Length: 306
Length: 304
Image 1 (tube, rainbow over the protein chains, first blue to last red):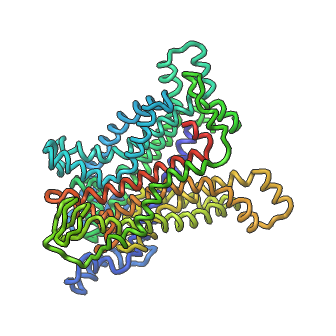
Image 2: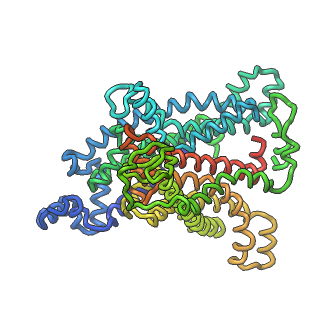
């Protein structure tokens, strides 16, 4: 058990280091001088030189790399030129907003997809099953940027029920959460359905039925738990994707999250901000997947033995 | 559990024991007619992308201020009909959608071919050789998968700058890992098969072995993945273009059309609605077809 957890933690750290290195390289192979790009065409040569020194861009690559890793360890990414404040502050504010949205979307997706998937699995090939299959495929097919705009068109512009952008009240969360949840509902419904169907044919389910357990008990105690492994894996992957993938939804609804911050930072060529945003999103993604790996031990005790 | 046994057992839900599936699951070979039927909507999309622009030509330079922001179905000044409406400078939306279909088709097709061949090459070599090369590839894949894929695409696209070629490169770089993993897994399975062992025993040289015996075994799972991925790639291209990081301005792509339409939501609902609807329908058609392909190639899934 401990050995398994330690192994997963070490591996997560290794992946994090790899991701950091990729970010470090990616930012430095951008064509052109970041300092000149950040300051724009009106900047003087001295200004550019000064900024290069401030950013540490005049140092040798290995030295820059060591300094970069040091900055990461201290969570110090310098100041954003565009926002004129410490990058870490902006990023942590924005990631909270994104987490709120992602949490709401995940909750919505779970509440809808589990009942739908279970109902469909219990009556394969029924009308309900087919309807659920088509609906979940539609959920996965409709691109979120368009879905968001359509929701705004109908619920904000035509019906005037909900606000279209911003984040002042809880009503502001409704449309973006639905937009973000939709593909997730599609994926999870299909997964719950096929996972449950696989489990329902196992011998131990037949045994449980044969000894006269009520259908509900068989489902709750034996079937559902065993289909959780693939579902939890995908929930973890998708939760990470929600953090990064919220970029689009946040842009559509002007939600002040980390994804929108990143896109804005890219267009502003604010490298410290770009670097820190990507890093935070990736680190949360790795951390969530680590939690998923560890949760396996509780869901499926067999993993401990391996 | 052997494959045939599980197919029989899984023929029906255990709750009600009247089995419905055996007649279908005992069928052998591909049901080409059914696959063809389900591919019709996709063929229609491909046809529209290739032929459409000749029937409804689009010229980005034409400005017809008298016909600006006409709703779908409106008759224009020259007597022609704008079936899906016009934009701010009087350009036909349908013609733009057909141009955009070309972009989606080119990016979707080229990315799958490029990402698929890179993935196949690395996956098969890593799976067949094993050892250091294999673990290096898998660690690299894990690191890449630590980035949410849209984030990675945004990062690479921002570095490369907007152009159709760069979008294809970007999406291939974000997608090759999936193909590599699938072909590696298929290679590992094929390596242990008796015909491969037999071929090795008779001294078939490795390159020939890969081409004749290993790669053919990886094709069915790759096809299933490709049908899933092509939909995702088309959405990814549209998302990048929506953000202004994909296809350059002036070249109509669906994502960019939705972005422009979004700014005119109050005056012209059709500008954002129509290209997005086209995109959704194409991706849905690919998804439906993908389900059929998977059912055909994976008999275990057929019961579902």
